[in-house]
Amino acid sequence: MKRLHWVISMLALLLLGAGSTIIGRCDAKLPAHRNALSTAAVTATAVGVERGNTFEGYGSANWSWGRYKGYKFAISFKPAMSKTLDSIWIVWKSASGYGGGNLGTWTFELHADNAANHTPAPAVLQTTKRKAVKVTGLRKPPDGYLKVNLPNVAVTAGKIYHLVIYNTDKNPQKNWSSPNTIMSRPDIPWQGEGCMSYDGKKWSPWGSLSNPVAPGQGGRAAYALVYTDNTAEGLPYYSATMRFIFQATYEGEVFPWNSPTVSVTGLGTSVFSAGTPAGPLRIVLEEVDGIILTDQILVNPAQVSAVPTWFTVTLPTPITLEQGKNYRLSLRADTCTDTNNCYVITMPYSSQQVPGWMAATWGGSGSYGIFFNGSTWQKETVPEPDLSFSLIVQ
Image 1 (cartoon, rainbow, N blue to C red):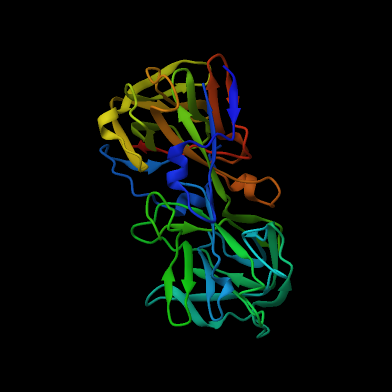
Image 2: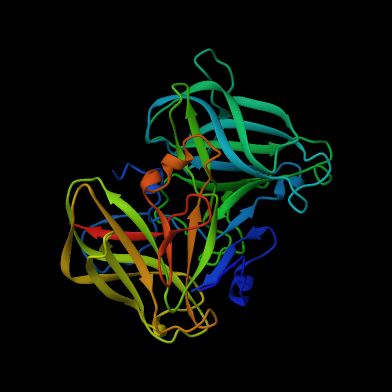
């Protein structure tokens, strides 16, 4: 079946707004992953512990309020390791429409957390030598990946920190650019990671108004914490790609199970619809050699809408994931005939250009998004993609 790239349907246009991007295509050892800190709002009918890549991504969106004096942006994060922080990588937008003039003059500060309301504490963190963890006068930020070299400072696993960013240019309305984010589902309760905006008076959670699952909420920013021992961790997903599921065009994830053997009682993912699908969406878990372990109806046409919703299904019989084996999870809708009436998902994706990001994706380099084109399984074409899904395990 011929593969068509960069196809944006009318449904996608409804999901997008200014400064937001989503990519479409139509056709027919699990290490501790950093996005485990993100607990999606999943309505699980199966009883057990939720595992899998529960991070959801629905396209990128830029914070453009650096055009206004007194406004600030903050990326909130919670390290998994207690180490000395050397630098932070983030994603920046400075291309036409995302910036202007000389692109601004930027300050970056690291703040501790105000435990009372989980906003940045007023004072900038200091090193043991009483040096502020602060970078000033950064000019001409790139359109892409920005490395912020900080004065080395110790961070503690499980504590919340905030990277505060603001434009100090004398004419910010002329000279500005944008930190970039990915639209996601807000964590409930908050897990210590996300985006905030300061309007000169108070800090508030920030998200794009174009976010299809939570307008004005759920903003997340990709980042990599690089330590002085050259290890790294972070949230690697900076955007998402849209995929249509119809006929023999399946979407899924290949992953090795390197954790101890577990019993799986439920499966889930986030899905929405284009038009009215002609039949159910099935979720299939199999070994990579094609031995099907379970094949279940996840959702029927009457249950799905144009708004992404997380669905789960309880398995009639628990299945076993054995340590050291490779598995394939896929979504299938054979009775849907075209992209006008079918099921749609989004896959968050990352980059190989930032140190540590490839390893920080769910499952590392051994796990990745795949598609079936009617005859063979192939790896997704965007960099380091992962299906958003959950495994309910005992």
